[in-house]
Image (cartoon, rainbow, N blue to C red; front, side, top):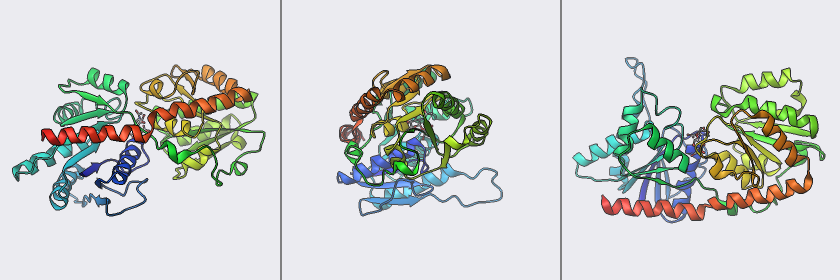
Length: 376
Ligand code: GMT
């Protein structure tokens, strides 16, 4: 099949999932064309089965806002025509589903019919999409997609609650390539560079936006390090970083907290981590938690959105209400302070992650594609 994938090329989860899906599809013999404004961060290889088409939006002084959707839909029309693309898969409704729909309509004028699959990822529904500024366009784009998927049951429920949806939404959870993470054996898992032998390593990875509640991460760590010798690795970049750094200074724990910035080497950091913290306000799935779990890192997270579908309470980690710093700290101490329990939770985290193996999830997308092509 020849598939065009539209996504955000940045470090965000939706872009990561879209890229990993495209790579997996190409390994399964499909020809995948990424259409984005920049090469996706995890797209390291371009081959005959993987192509990248950059969407350019030339600056024109008349425009206060440059018309990205127009450039994207025009690019899609050209890519579909030039490469014989059979199906569009857009990740994140805003503005990709909208631009994809316009491309479909333009192609119809030329006698080309192409199905569009839209995958909803989270903030396109929960935080941004249901704002009155965008809601009519998002509702329209979802209702006019040929197939709609959501990354968790919780996101499906939210979509049906916030929007007037007239079509079926298929839940296809995010996934991870379990085989890539054989038990911690690779040589570059250099724990000794980060912490002493008697220190536990706690990690948080995100885009440091408000929704991630990274001040809670710091507060939880502050409580934990009173009882267990530990270090905190803060991986990522975003608007809340400065406030978190200030809190670390005020709490006088700067020598135990490392702000590592954005990294392409999350795997290496998770490899030597003992615990992962994700106390988000909301999370449609929590891909970061799954990436930790597959590397046998238990997760302390909030009990919100799709997180309970990923992190199993008292098995792969613990779930607490949003903002319950005390509860999260106690659970963290209970795991880190007992080596037998820690070993057990590490094994269980890995076991829970195996439910989302790429080999079980990607064929579900292929099935949907086949059905959409038959209908088109
Ligand atoms: O919030 C982020 O981390 C980025 C955001 C995105 O759109 O890239 O992530 C969303 O999609 C991910 C992949 O499906 C999910 O794992 C995240 O839970 C979701 N974020 C939120 O719902 C806040």
